Image (tube, rainbow, N blue to C red; front, side, top):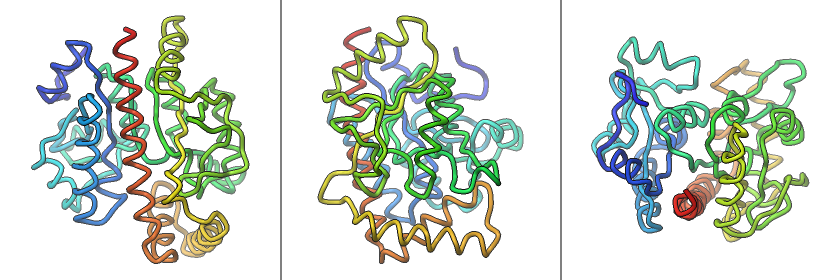
Length: 305
């Protein structure tokens, strides 16, 4: 069911009508997550990887007040270079659309649009979660609430390690969201493969994950799942090094009074500087890894429907 504010790319629309596999992609990583031109290169490569696996990519963003489900190369370039791009979650859609602004959808915003468009599989880097010190600040990402409400599977490298991973898992449990480890029993922590926290279930093939999705939604159980896919071993960073960088960045953010949706971009930028750029390479590689797995799950899920 589409409305007057949404434009679906013809290729994506055709795939959905024909029950072919489609993978949703967020756009915040393009506008706020990486510098130009790496962001364009990454976005194009991700789409190509999904196509190579037999699925159709659908990068989601807002351009000039129109929700776009599937971007052209020109639109990706525009989003990557533009300076006036809002980070858009649920609370921001109405403002950005009514003011005809540009917006990059966060994990929560992308999941919401994917649900509207009928896309069941979504690949991203890492999800947001419960921030460190949330018992005082109440800073909890909208990602967790949105994933619990929409019938979309989010393939990610776990939750960003700048978060309180234990509390993030507790919150997801309360909301009834399964956290599935792909070939792992341990929740990956974005830049690293280990966190010390256990996932709910380990599944080892895209087919098994597709079967779980089919069983859940066929039973009428609403809500998404998290598929935690560890960063490839060659790009996994040393957990001690990355945790020291995170602690340093968190302290600096507190001293500067950085709050709300400015926290994550600030911390990721600081960590990139502290790690002399190695975190950016890791970030790109884990996104590619998630895109490939998401496409495989989407192909398996489409065959079950």
